[in-house]
Length: 173
View 1: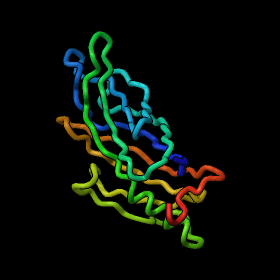
View 2 (view 1 turned 120 degrees about the horizontal axis):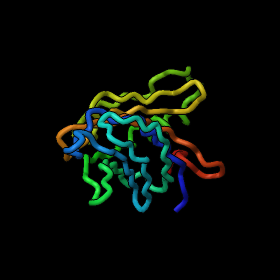
View 3 (view 1 turned 180 degrees about the vertical axis):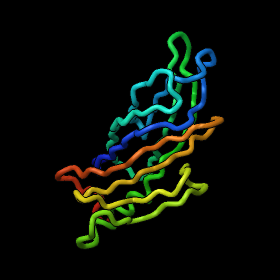
């Protein structure tokens, strides 16, 4: 199957993450993002429950229906890493906005192409706007509430990149 494009996921920061190192009262968090057979991860940040990664991770998108999963862990040296929460990244509204942008004419930068509300079908903690930026790129900042954990949120940002010569997100794909 051909690659439709690249999804850049900027992992910005964590907020009020769960404490897994009881002795220090902190955690050494890192994020793993998976889609099908692809797996990308951030570096771990020592002793910080409010870490700032600002790391760009890239996934090749071949099938828009394959879910994107996010898992957070606490890095341990002498034992298995401790889970710190999970989430599913719903890119369908984002893909709809990218397709919309390709089908309409010139739009001013800064315009919100779509607003996504928290619901049972996504793990958003707050409303998320999909914005047309001044350099014609489309971004979506997401404030995600981690599941399967006592506390923790994650701020990420999505950006689509076409691959020259591919059919990309043209109508019908």
